Image 1 (cartoon, helix red, strand yellow):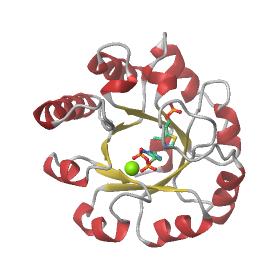
Image 2 (tube, rainbow, N blue to C red):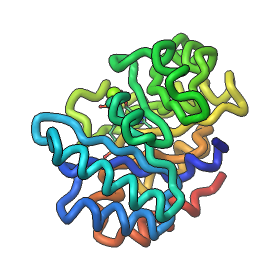
Image 3 (cartoon, rainbow, N blue to C red):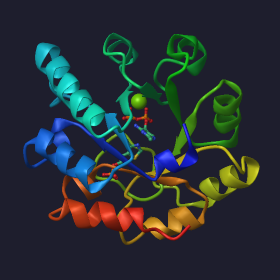
Length: 209
Ligand SMILES: Cc1ncc(COP(=O)(O)OP(=O)(O)O)c(N)n1
Ligand SMILES: Cc1ncsc1CCOP(=O)(O)O
Ligand SMILES: [Mg+2]
């Protein structure tokens, strides 16, 4: 993958949407998001066959728009569906156990410290997600908002490594994370709950590098 693939990384599960999630996803894709993460989790998340059916529908839409379909947390689902990749956090399956299973595919890892970042890069991650940068309404168990200082250091230490920023990112504050060194923005609510998805995605795509 290229760093520019992370430009507008849309993340979504059904509970993030006030409208039909498949319509939300199709609008986001047609507006030009560059990466998609299927993140269906939590007590209110779909389960069993409904979960798998929804994942397949999202994957089909992503294929139509030629956008990578990444599965959050559920490595088995990613492998079963032959997804383009998986995203794991520090409390999920460790990179060293899954890297080989995803040969030729994309593996993203969430990092919050320099140690975690070095381990992810050395362990063969394709990109890292850094955040939450700002307060988020979409992850009840998120760590406190950390601002951009770690993001800036991560970019300084790894000038060419793909980095995406996440957490509370909106069209108003996104330039700050790009200036701090992120290749792109990973966003749930700003896109899933936008009243004008096309305009929102277009604004994210015009960020000053
Ligand atoms: C791109 C990206 N970055 C970070 C995360 C967060 O992963 P994690 O810490 O495992 O939390 P959950 O999303 O699983 O609740 C992410 N999903 N994507
Ligand atoms: C999954 C995740 N990881 C850190 S913050 C976050 C939620 C991001 O959602 P939003 O863009 O709505 O703040
Ligand atoms: Mg996780």
